[in-house]
Length: 489
Image 1 (cartoon, one colour):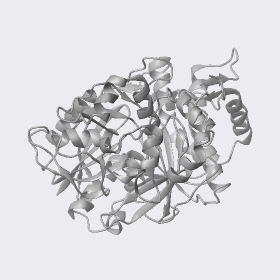
Image 2 (cartoon, rainbow, N blue to C red; image 1 turned 120 degrees about the horizontal axis):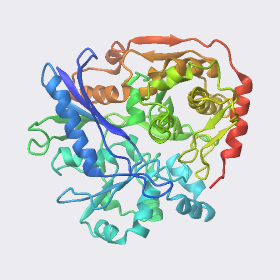
Image 3 (tube, rainbow, N blue to C red; image 1 turned 60 degrees about the vertical axis):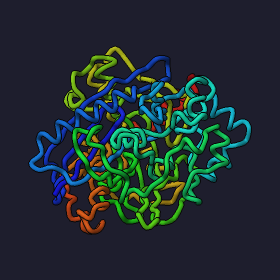
């Protein structure tokens, strides 16, 4: 027995076939295009996401030793998608979570005094990161499309909802609480869409998807739409909550950090809604079919792995992302260079959409190696910023950090991270824990696995990085550099 897991990320789609004992039987991957039509804008073509999904799944299924029995889906969160309710065609580009165009809308709502109430209801803050502000922008700047939404001809959602619609041939318009709780439209306490918030952002509740538990009966794939397959869709979660599940962080106090396009630090807070006044977000981790909700506190960092991609694609310093480690190892330290990768503003704990990237401390002696090293250090510093808040103002403990995601394969980064945090960093044998979490949820939803405890036995350690000494001066330079990058725009 196996599960097909789809991880629809920010830059591409990964498909894994996961066996009953937690092994990866086969995988497929397909990138899709990133569009930057204006400074601070980031868009995706929903049809390209769907075609990448088909291609990645086709590759994985061709390499699998047996046909999967069910499907789990995880996705880039907060990205706003509109599609035709009948044809499923998207009439406009999706606005990606990294997009900053709604900073003015958020500022206006903040100035009007709405942020305390929004934070109370959602556990979030008024920031362009979240989906509700993106829908509000569409209503103001794309009235033709929005008229179709208010008239019932088009629907809205996040990438999970869009892909479920495509997978089921339009039969299902659903989302789950982990994704819904990232929209600024979800009431954490009530556990559903908030009419008050929908009115504030101008989003018709009828256009929003039905909220279903994270595992169980989500829908079924339509063979005519999805590679001739009729599979139960039995697991659904936003990527960071899926990674928390894939790291088997089932107990309150368990912590993981996913190093992807951005980095996301989540701590399981159990059945308690823990609120933070120090830059952390309160979010739903997952909900069982019986209705029991597990919550988490999250530190969302917008640009980490994307900074390495920028070294590759923007500057041409490296040809592949793994080369960043090789290049960084050519120097013993950053030579005093500090890179603040605020390429789309700053997320937790600073929350400054007007911050911009900065490279400071450059001299005639600065080399490509110093910049590569400064990039890896920046990722570790950004995560330390969040942990400092978790262990300080929020009063939580982080005895060990479980790391996953593409950049967690960088040994130098993981060692710098352990040094900066002063706690061990554990990397699992399977680092694609986002897709693994989707597989685990789907398997629970169909009875392939009987319990979370059974899933714990599938987690295996690849390497444990022990702290070897903290460079306090480097972190002090980082904090100084962050202040210079803030409010730039």
